[in-house]
Image 1 (cartoon, rainbow over the protein chains, first blue to last red):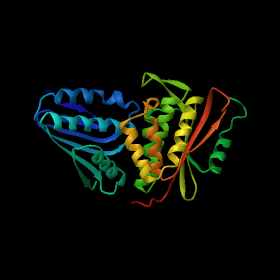
Image 2 (cartoon, rainbow over the protein chains, first blue to last red):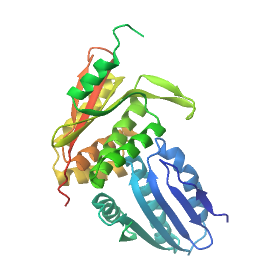
Image 3 (tube, chains in turn purple, yellow):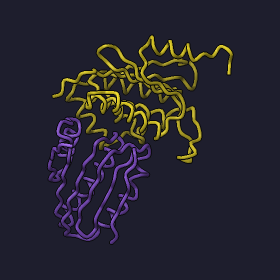
Image 4 (cartoon, chains in turn brown, purple):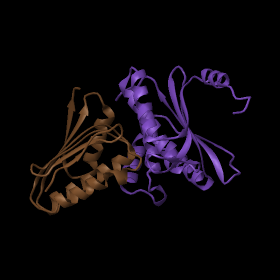
Length: 127
Length: 186
């Protein structure tokens, strides 16, 4: 299966999914006005990727800003991964990186932890 | 252009009201990126700048999707909303506001939503946000409701709204929220 890559722009994140290693990275900013349309290719890829059971997946979020629309798309990604772990023998680790003093980004990670049954590691970094 | 038009009047009015940024027109994605950059350049508190930017984005989204006044965006290849975004300030606060024409029934829904959100406490806001993120209401397919909750959570202040031309089918809605210049980070 091919990798997925979306180059970053001012309002869209860099997305780099590696099929062979199961390393899925999303970083930067996301405030596309049409988040459903923008993330559709991401979901198309994920659906195909998750057809094969028993993979080990590491999902890394390293966002500096995302709008409320995007937050719905992220929740949908978490739901997919949670379902994969529950029903398809997957092993999923989510790393949620946030700038050391960014309390809002940290809180977003905590809220996803409360909203899903996935293992989510909150990891501060100094930029 | 009318003879009465005067940039000096604009300038004076902005100065009087301490408006540091104002834009009227098509609210495009590129414009929002520029606003984000200029906020980051200006403000020495990174956290405040980021929250301020978040408020602008959520208000702009409202204009982009719901303004009944539209203009064709060559870049997006579709009609997008036209409206006003402004940032003003007092000694203690920044005030971010949006203004645009909207279907009066939609304005009624939004103002009722604001009233509901404004009376929630911190925990109530958190629960409502969680609930709305997972189960968006039917009229909220584009996510305006979530944005309103987020604005109150990020600013720590209630939303205010003013409705002009309320007797017309397309009334004019002003939404505003203020945010402290210095944040008590928790």
